[in-house]
Amino acid sequence: MSSTLIFLCAGSVLWLMGLHGLARLHHPIRRIMAINIMGSGTFMVMIALANRGEHSDPVLHALVVTGLVVAVSATAFALRLAVAISAHKSGKQQAPEPNE
Amino acid sequence: MLSLELLFDITLSVLLLILAGTALHVRHLYTGIVLFVAFGLLLAITWARLGAPDLALAEAAIGAGLTGVLLLAALARIGPEPPPRRPPARALSAGVLGVLVLILLIRAVLPLEQGPQPLPGLVSAHLDTSGVSHPVTAVLLNFRAWDTLLELVVLLLAVLGVRQLQPAGYKQAHAWTLLRAWSRILAPLSVIIAGYLLWRGSHAPGGAFQAGALLAAGIVLLRLAGLLPVLRWDDWPMRALVLMGIVVFLGIAAAGAWLGSGWLNYPPQWSGNLILLIEVAATLSIAASLSLLVIGEREELGT
Image (cartoon, rainbow over all chains, first blue to last red; front, side, top):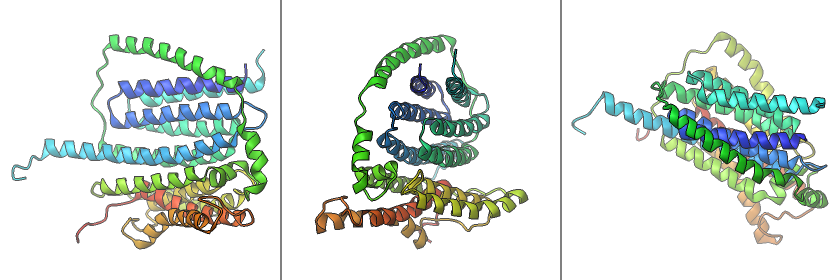
C-alpha cells in the first residue's frame, strides 16, 4: 500500500461526493462548491499519478496549475450567473412592474 | 504496522473527505463556505506532500483565498436558502448508486498506478533546449505553451462574461481598523513575494500563475480594506493590463511563425529571455484579471 494508492482512492471518493452533492443539493452556491470538489478530486487523481514513479511528472503538474486558474474563472462566472438569477427572481416576486 | 508517512497520508485523506462532506451538507451555508476554505488549505498541504510545491502555492492563493472571497460575496448577494426537503428513500438509492459508481471508478483508476510513464524522461531529455531549468515552467511556457495561451484566453472570457452580468454595486462594509493596519503590511509583502516567485520560476517551483495569484490577493486585500479606489474594466490601464499577457504571448508566437522557427517555437538562444518576458506579462495580466473577477465593479453604462 503506497501513498499514491491512498490518494487515488481519496480522489475518486471526492469526485463522487461532489457528484452526489451536485445532484442532491438545491442552493446554487452549494452546487458550485460541489463542482469545485469534483474538480479537486480529479486534480488529486492526476497529482497522485504524477507522483507514482521515481521522478514526478511535470506535464501533469503543469496541467493542474492551468486547471486551477480555469476552475477559478469558471467559478467566478458561475457565481455571477447565480447572483443574476436570484436578483431576477426576487425582482419578479417583490416588485412586479405592470408597465414594462 | 503502518509507517509514519502512510499514517499521515491516511489522516490527510480522511480529513479532506470529512471537510468536503460537511462543507456541502452542513446546515448553515456560511459555515459550509468557511469549511470549504479550510478544505482548500488542506488540499494545498496535500499537494506539497505529493511533491507538487508549484501547485501548493497556487492552491493556497487561488483555491482557498480567492474562491473563498468569491463564495462569501455571492452569499451576501443571494441570501440564505429555504429549508431542504429530503425524502429518505431517495437518499438510500443515491447511496447505493454511489457505492456502485465508486467501485467502477476505483477499478478503472487503480491499474493506472502500474502504467508506463514516458513523459518525465522526455521532458528531462529536452530540458536543456527549453531555456529554463525548472521542468514545470518548461512545460507550461515552452513544450505546452498552447495550454497557457488558451488559459489566458479563458481568463479573459470569464472577465468579459462577469462584466456583462455585473449586478448593481453593493455597499461595502466599513473596514475594520485592524484589517486596515494589517493590509498595509501584507500588501507590500505580497508584492515582494510575488516578484520573488516570478524570478524564481525559471529554476525552482514558482512562476507566473503563483505570482499573479498572490498579487491579486494583495489587491483584493487592499480593496476590501478600502485603501484602493474602485477597479473597473472601463479604466484603460486596467484593460491594458488584462490584455497585455495575451498580446505579448500572441506577438511572440506570431513573430516565431513569421521569422522562421514556427508557431510558439522559440529560437533556442533567446528562449530564456522570451519566456521571462511572457511570464512578466502573464503575471500582471493574471493579477489584473483575477482581481477584476473578484472585486471588479459595474461601470455606469451610457452616462
